[in-house]
Length: 208
Image (tube, rainbow, N blue to C red; front, side, top):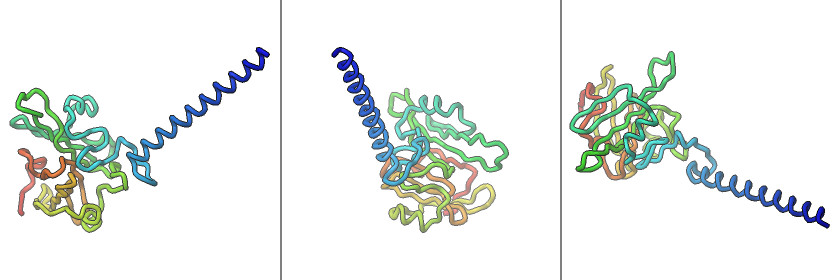
């Protein structure tokens, strides 16, 4: 009799553990579905959410946390408590390295904490939940973000024309070179992508 009870108890525990594992997996899958969108899986480390975040970096995040995540910037510019920090990809043998740039400034008048105001990326490994990324042409980008408007045009250091567009209400801006996007910039909703005190590329000459 005791032996039968022990067997029954073992079966009950095994069944409960299996159900718990299934529930846990279902919860994980549900979260992944929410973050990645139906029918698509995007690694959260490379997920673009316009107006909110790029990968593991979010707008409004303390720059100390960004520094702990990315390390010391490879390049940048700073003035009046505002700064661009630029990190390059570590791929060896690649002439044009991908980059992630973070614009920051003091969070409030106490001037104690700097937080993230904009995040700019050039790598196609970053994607929105429906697969939108850099490298697309202007018409395809317009289909995705119909509110985008051209806001400025520059000559870069190679004398190529770079056109900047902004979908202000969506919280995302774009740079186009020779008809294709070369970067995406996530910024707060309803704030202009070029509404910063510092210019990311001071060597570029504005022509429009």
